[in-house]
Length: 381
Image (cartoon, rainbow, N blue to C red; front, side):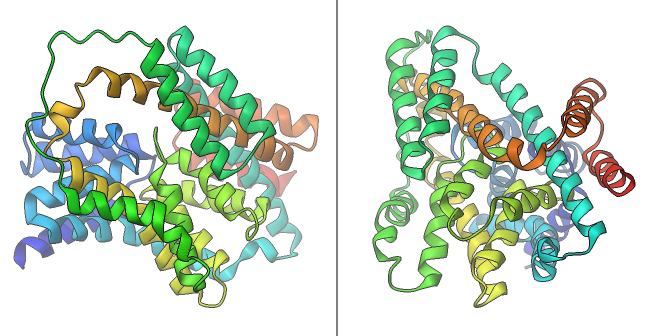
């Protein structure tokens, strides 16, 4: 029990101060658990980071889950997730209760305008970075261009799923990744968590007509199951899943709030779940949060032992490169079809967004300073 309490305290403190997105979170984890506490060796931590990028899901939370697993077994992994996510969950739940997007106060409306511009800049920065990392050759660039065009004109969750599968097939065929030595799968996949993952992803949607609780869980689980490339990618997936229940304005507001609070980006589900399930705001927030994180954790439990050999298979490596190129398209399509029309209403807005993007990329301004500046400018002008 002392071990579990220790895990909770360490991750809770990190959850209170972990601003800056998944890359910053991973740096906090390394400093705390590798350098300071010596819970892990550097090599072991690097394997957890590689595994989190190999599988869909929230990378920093998956690494935290792995650290908890190593330190305290399954209960340790669950404790690490709960402790790290709790601060952002509570903050976003409180914001959802106030539901300030419905407030007609002129100052609140101006703040919302500033937050929309902030979201536009952050997503634009993510797209540029991800494009540089994931679209490095003709095949991945071709996948990016074609996928973006398809997603702009045919926007639905099914189309997104088809785009991801097609990208994986194309890249596995046309990419020529050289592997020096062939490896054989030595350790088995853990079947129970993997079968549970497949059941919740493919079978549970057929039962969503039974009640709203099953529907909200299924919708958020589906979105969390397809997130490759970082927390930002959950944005287009959730947008399509919830488009009939949550307005674009409220969605963009939720994204801005999720950027402004510490902890994982996936905590956006805490706000959206409350807005989605108004019959019971807390239950909606809780179900959405658990459902969006669960796929990544089930996949960690499934592949943690066999990752080393699976990750060296040539076809799998090439397929993942195609999927990563396609997820850049998912974000680009949302930027073009939703964020830009909602945030940009004048040349002044466009100039402000461009200047902010340049400043962010050149000077690496902390997120809290960025969002404060946007809110201040919105109130002044």
